[in-house]
Image 1 (cartoon, one colour):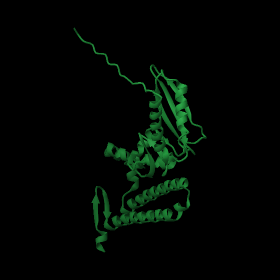
Image 2 (cartoon, rainbow, N blue to C red):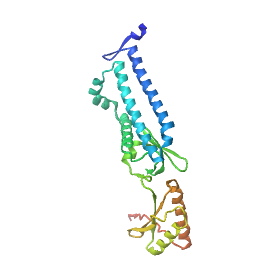
Image 3 (tube, rainbow, N blue to C red):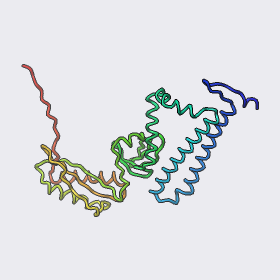
Length: 273
């Protein structure tokens, strides 16, 4: 037992083996408590909730897990003999000394906390960010996992979800699909509109209400910008319907001899004689 009273120094702070073991024990107990709470919610509560409420409940569970960990860490440090007041007093200098690498980690951690509190997204949502379309499967301290319909998994840093344009396609009852097109001025817009709306009636899962529409978005120098808007109920079919619409548009445009304008970049070359 004398071994537990063995004292050693790190800097100006004295530690005993017993104090270090007490700190480790606190962290171990916190880990076990977190595991038990997670297991209880996963097996008993989550199966009884609707899918939308389950995502919210998981967010709150993760926040609770962070709180337990932070409290346990502070208690463990106190048990080990580390003065927390000194740690806070030197916090600013410590952060500067750690450098830019840790700032990235802290930025993503704080962004993850913001995501869990504000809930712009939650597990199960279909989102589009940075060119990636997929379902949110987990929000961790550093990154958010997104699984695409094609089976690819992306881990996107939490900070990017707050900084970049984020589209959540699960916040409404129906999911909107936009198909942008560039049309030549030689083509009759009303004819284009008729063809596009005709295609939407061929795909059963496209909703009649809200009604599909075609919008003339912009008149550029040598072309018109047109957008087709359709709505579906099953967000998991988003990529399939978008692809199907594009295929049918190509087929119908070829059938009616409608060509897309070729975008050319003019380059002037000067020659010295």
